[in-house]
Length: 142
Image 1 (cartoon, rainbow, N blue to C red):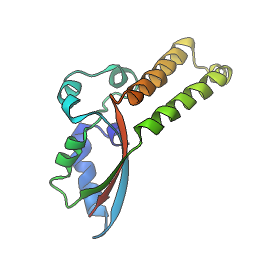
Image 2: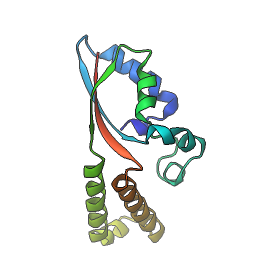
Image 3: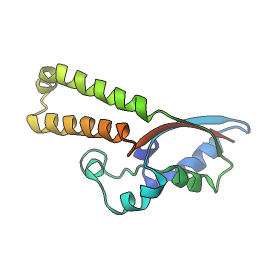
């Protein structure tokens, strides 16, 4: 998941992929995506998820990925959007989380953790369902 790498490390990450892939090699990355037109505003102000769930992350846009690839020999040759399926996955994770809440609490997690995780899963599902976030599997070729 490229968003977990963080913007400062996108170019070194892709440089390593470029260096480690054989000529003609392919790599597949999966990443959450913010629409290109929203990246500047999103980058300017850390959202709730960045502050509370994944500090240091930044969800890229397709244009940001293309720019990070420029210094490499890598090119995106396929891009499959799976955001709608990811919304369903999040809904199911949330259902399973609630079904297993007693076990979660038995592990020592408190009500605040449970509410935070519930909000995270529910809000992400909504973001994917409405198209405010995407999720793609991107094939890179060298």
